[in-house]
Length: 420
Image (spheres, rainbow, N blue to C red):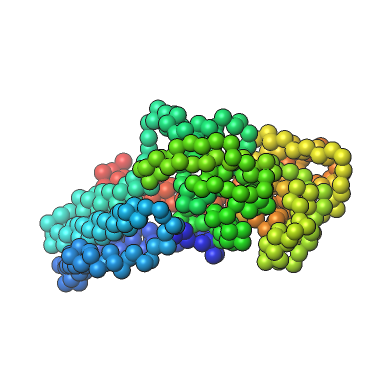
């Protein structure tokens, strides 16, 4: 089940917490290095408790499996066998990690015992302890990153009929997989933007939007327009205004070939557009409610919580051209004959995103509950959105400084031990 981003923990706080834990670990290691007594009794008691816990969890895996299953709020799955296999894989991952933790901590306890009983000198003990830590970090990193040959990545788009069909559209759009297809993350591998997918830390703002419009169970036309959804993938027929069936294709999902209906949303808004009027509301709840009123037209009106610095007006000419669209930077060229509000179909996230208009900083407005916007004067403008969170920069500086201090410490230790 995706974890909702109920609060935004600053990156700097996380970096400082990791720095503090590393410092405590270093102090603990130094305490052991300076010890002159034998191994304390709690060392073996702790190691034994870890191994015993791993053994008990393995022996009691069946009741543990029954206890874990209700904790997963899986999306509806047409194949109960697949869901059973998925839950079993989760149990196996848990047991594997428990045994790995027991092995690593048990190995650390053995190293400490050998050292404190004068059977290992300080340099050898420190080297083995560092190797153990690196092994653990490498194990965690390899679980998150699975490098693939470039040739394999280039071949993968050609193996999927639905992806080939969508890639034939060269425009900037999103696809929306409906029902149980929603959580599929494959589309990023094909350079296709998706309004679906799974993430372990889903933003609450986006989840609230999905819930309000009953996505992905239903295909609400207004939500589709705001999310720049031009194509929909559905396992079942749809009857939605402005949505027309264009093709059928086979999609390999959960290891099985699934027939998918491909629909075009003829009322999709572009990735960025210019609104000529706005509706001011008091808070996010009111903004979400305003989006669902019958007289709201997202193509010309935008719902704002804070008033724009310029009053938008209707006009005859309005154009937005996307010049650059990257992960951390978006550049738009805008022309309008009257003041407008530029709406960008990207999630409003003020913790890092900054905007400039013709090189001058501009406030980013929360638009249509979920999106971001910038107020513009009439004329030609270049609008740039950049993701530059200050806490990430500070965290990077702290990490670099810590790495330099560690490197300096090693250099001093080597100099003291072996001389100039």
